Length: 142
Image 1: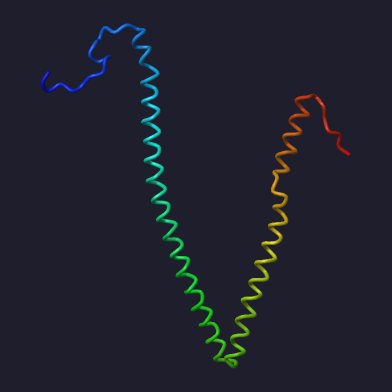
Image 2: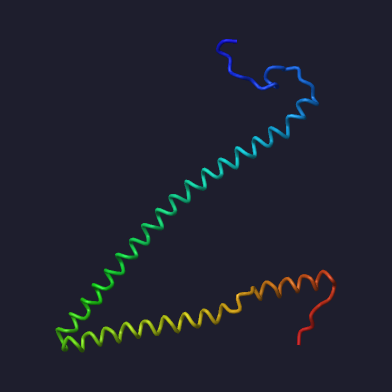
């Protein structure tokens, strides 16, 4: 007919049998799942694009911040140069920077030692304790 949209079998025949309707369920579920997957893909691609642009902007800001830090270090050298010779001012600023590096390295080493081995030892021990409790045995404490 003129002006009608194409219909599915279930829309054309309102008196379809229950068996025919049940037979359509897998196809309809498949269509629904495929549609949801396509929607998920589209949404994730859109979000990843925005996240990528945001990360790029953070990298650009970090790059500019690095140059700003270098300018501040040069200003510190020039400031010390007002009091001591320029070569001594550069050495003083370099010594301060090396001291900061040493402190950061020591703190990093301490944290790495605390984090090794990377196995979740506390959780493993808790699971072992749960298994022992289920079996009805207990670990004797000394």
